[in-house]
Length: 433
Image (cartoon, rainbow, N blue to C red; front, top):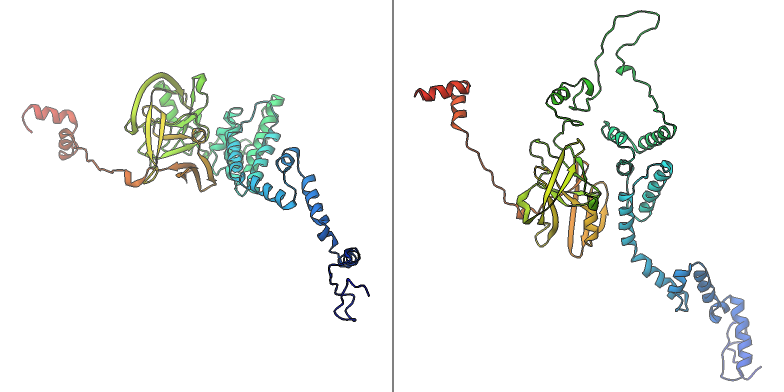
């Protein structure tokens, strides 16, 4: 028996080894053999840790390898990668959402590739935990191809019910084929849209059937736009426009100024007061903050006139730029120093791209709401009739109901069983009233 090794029991001589601080070489051989038999020698020698380190390092590109080149253990490599990329996830989601909403189809390029790219961004956001459903992607897709196919986009947007993403994609691909071949695809007419149907060998009197289509000019059902009496009346007055604006219709304004390209959503019709007239609409393609409410400005300065053209071919001018403040909550207000004032506009628009330039980041964007954050300031836009709307802070709004006095002439008109105004004026001159 070696004097350097003490065995606890003769029957356990193969299981227990004790080092007596003498003849280490003999103990080293014995303990290595013991650990190899248990499969533990790779842990003691560090070979197991080196294998994990080698696998991690070999899977990195040059940029990430340079980032972790100063550490020596696999745990340090993994911790640095987690810290670097989990912190960037939030910024990456905002970047992908911005890319999705600002992507524009280039005329002449492949429509299939454009749709595939949009689908890829949708899947990328889904993997990041932010979901964009097919209905929203369809609306974004129509916005991205509006410059190339404006008529097709307007037709698809005016359909009821709204077309699905597959229907939008198929129509855009068919439109691309039409543009390449130089021909227009003629679609089969529905039976209910035909004025006369019958057998070719039997003569029948002409009978006009009831039209169930919707007029694109006055938005009423029962006739087409070319026979609309409202359109004929407007043309007789010299008014040329695409359609009669409705209460919540939003038109597109294009800047003629080359230094400020883009478009703005607005309407200038004389419709009744809308329930979102005091709210601010988030516009992902707008190049400037615009409002028609002069009372919102704290400072207003005259500037070089900027002509804007609406979708119905009418034009408006902006000649003033100033500072306005939007009360977001009890402790925060959003200052817009370069907001444009356009008289008679019925909507207040705030540009998404300007908010992103000012340091705001997108925290949430789905079918229900959009939330932007900068430091402690939070902007909450709720979904309302296809728009993202932010209403001013309720405590900062002073509501006042004013009753307008009825003119005396109108009062006598109602008292005298709606007598015409000429007779009422004559009676007043004769001293009867």
